[in-house]
Length: 234
Image: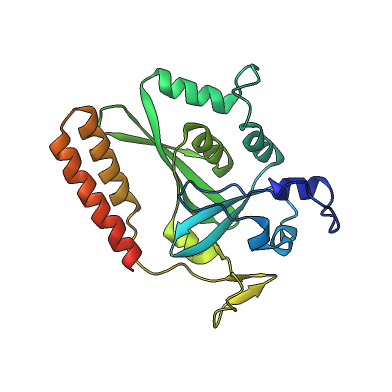
């Protein structure tokens, strides 16, 4: 949101904000990265409308995705759109339609980058069923849908390795890192891609609970805990 405000005011360096803005981020338990940690230098790099995704992994990473003005405005408006009584926009309509048909959005994934364009997919399933369906979507639309459906956003490991910006916290720049303003460009930690495995475990656990198979649900929960512990150990 702060980047949006800065763009609207021509990136005036001497502007005083009444409250610190927060960057659009992926769902997670860690607090969102604020401007004090990132610095205005990073935001000044992006003159076009940009959505910043916070990558939850071993370290703090941001993935900037340049989008249209409309996508950023709709993401900001989503904070109060359900309370203003207006007719639903296309993202609210999609959410309501999915719910009416008995489906739920499981996740959104930024899948690949071709030259300078990112691609995304929406994954959804019918409640109580194992089959997962997916459709292609623009990242800006997919992120707006995920925000309204409270679905997690995942990013392809290859994209994190090549495009993510690692945030420094005054610890000094890493050797061989490429400096850009007050952040370091670096690679994510090596390791297997466990996103699909984690999603399967969560889905199986959720299905077992809905079908009141609590012993199975406990088994899937334990496997999920072990998987997440192994991720944090590496």
